[in-house]
Length: 341
Image (cartoon, rainbow, N blue to C red; front, top):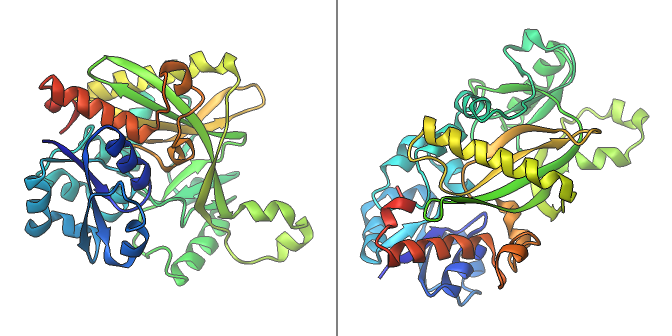
C-alpha cells in the first residue's frame, strides 16, 4: 500500500494531515532537534529521525521509505537543503515533476520558463554597473527571502553586499540575481494542475510578511536614513488575500500558459501544486517576479480549505489533502507514474 512522506518543515503538517484524511500511512523525515514538535501530532504515523535532511539520500533512510512504498512530497526545504542533482537522484517516487525543481532553483532557467509562459516580467539587470534605479537583489534557489536587498546604484549594491558577507548571510562567491523592483500589491497565486483530469485549479492567494523590511514603514524617514543595517526580506508568515472576481480569468490564463510552457520545456511538465508570484499595480496589471514549482508555505493559511476551493469541492480541501487525493486517484487507476517522477 502506498504511503506519503515529506520533510519535517515548511508545510509538512498540512501535507501529512491531508494524507491521513485520505487514508494514507504518513511518514516524516524529521531532524532530531524538531522531534518534540512533531510528536505532538497523532496524524504522523512514523518519524524517521536524522541529524540533517540530506540524510534522506542515505540507504538507511531510503530503505524505510521504499519499504513503505512512499511517495515523497517536495517543498521549499527540499530545494533549500539539497542540490538539483541530489534531488534528481532520490530513488523513491517524488510527487510532481522533480526535474522542474532545477528550473526553480536556477534564476536563468526560471526567467526562461516565465518568458515562455508569456508572463509580464520585471527587467533583469545584467551587472551591478547597469543599476540605474531601484532594484531588488536575490539569491539563487529557495532562500525564503533571507539575504535579499534593495539597491539604487552600484555603490549602494556593493556596500550592502559587503555588509551581508561580513554578517555571514552571503558568501563572497555567491552568484546574485538583480531585478528591477516592481511596486504594487503583493499576491502569490496558488494553483494545482491535475494530469489525471487535464485541468488547472486556482487554489487561492496569499501575501508574505517579511522581517524586518516591513517595520521600516513605521520609522520616520529621517531615522531610516541614519539606519545602517541592511533590512532583511526573511519570510516570517503569510496572510490570505481574496482577489477581485474580475481578476480571476487572468489568473487562470497565466496558470494555463505556465502549464503549457513547462510541458514544452521540461517534460512531463508542471504537475501538482505551483505558485506564480508577483504584484498588481495601480491598473490591476500583474507583474510576475517568481514562480515556485511545488507547494508553497502560503497554502498553510488554508488548512481547512480556501475560498476558491470551496467553490470546487463540497468539503474542506487543503492543498495537502488535494495532493493526497490526486495520489489516491492515481493509485486506484494504476496511473501513479503519471503524477510522480
